[in-house]
Length: 291
Length: 235
Image 1 (tube, each protein chain N blue to C red):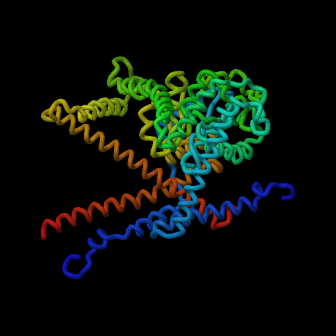
Image 2 (cartoon, rainbow over the protein chains, first blue to last red):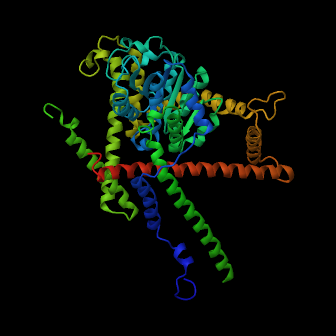
């Protein structure tokens, strides 16, 4: 307390109850969600390059998408997966879904139920897309797939023999895929795909990771990765590129974009608190020197 | 719906949504202060997670990668694709290594588990070492060798790209100088090390910013879930 028993604004800020911060952050997230506040995030170079890679491949290209995450990072990773699969199917590519995480197989199943079955009912399982499911082994699995895919995946996730699917013709090793897209949130994930498949096999690898992981993977771009979506922002950028090229998706492919409104407001609140905290610190230091 | 399993019914789905919502609120209640509801949700989460991962490991690793190799004919009702396969006796080695890992539970013979651990660590080190060396060391050095100026090349060369490449090259060199302690950080060398500190601080700041974005994304996901639950959209 300064000046006897009188409480100054400085005292209020320096003794601010942390629950006030929690409440303001909660409001900063909830209000934009309720009023549906969205912001346009233009695609950055690293995301646009990834988009262009998928866009420029001829229809029928073989794209392996690995779901290396679980429910805890769905708000970040699932919008990436949705946008990538929509894009691949719009272009007429063949999509192979697999997972290095046991929880990832459930996420790809959710994507099939919510996106492929609903929006692309004309796409045929086994010809346009296939769900290979999860296999244990982490980076060891990638190593094995580099030499023999069908040794590990003898069936699809439902137990149907792999040779019964036309789209598996000509798929013997990872080198037979035109692009690997790894969606990760930790180990094993995108990094392992670069280390154990992309680099040794000279296979184009791209994908997306949680924002926490993104700074660790950016150095791989552009020589070791064709592009990368970093967190929710990366997903929103990919959605923006997708909608610009395929306007018919503007109503459907917006989950990441609508989540960027709360990001902006929450960040503004955090920045405000950082500024207020620093000003309070400076004034407190001056006051302590004075007395 | 008649004939539909209960767990696939809309009622089961609605119950799941309500349980998820209450669990989320219980966890959030910790932000106010520690309380029994938070403790209950936390313990439930830890228990379910442990059980889930144990079950997953059993069915996705032990059954297909060990039991199906050693006793394929016994798995008719579990893994029909394994029935008829040849027994692969070499899988007795991982079985043995797996069993001796459990000797850690008996003090007198706990030393035996070191053999299995040595195998695990040796395998991980062996597979990772070469890949890290190639992808994160040699290739990263290569990635840093970017052209600052290419005589005769104009396509794709902008002031921005030249500046960006200068920052990459200069930043990496200065950051490495900061970690070079065999020479005193004085004069030009010291100034370069100081720039290295700024480069590191900038990288840490960017990393922290991304972490904040990640946490807000997860909060947004939970809030969206709660809003859809409260408005009845999700059940």
